[in-house]
Length: 67
Image (cartoon, rainbow, N blue to C red; front, side):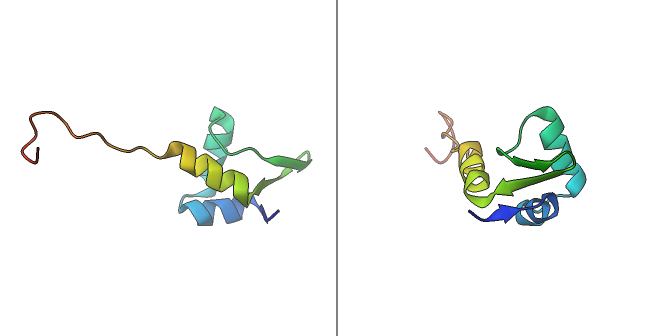
């Protein structure tokens, strides 16, 4: 298990810490481990699985010029 802090996660995702806190408040974040009242960590494997679940594969539109 490779634990990541909120700061680590923000760097990994290329977003601000504020964005991570928003994800958490919205309930749209990877599972996390609550180490204490004010300290949470994320397992890298959970983060990667969460990212994979966010993947969108666009479908070609019918009638598009490249069809």
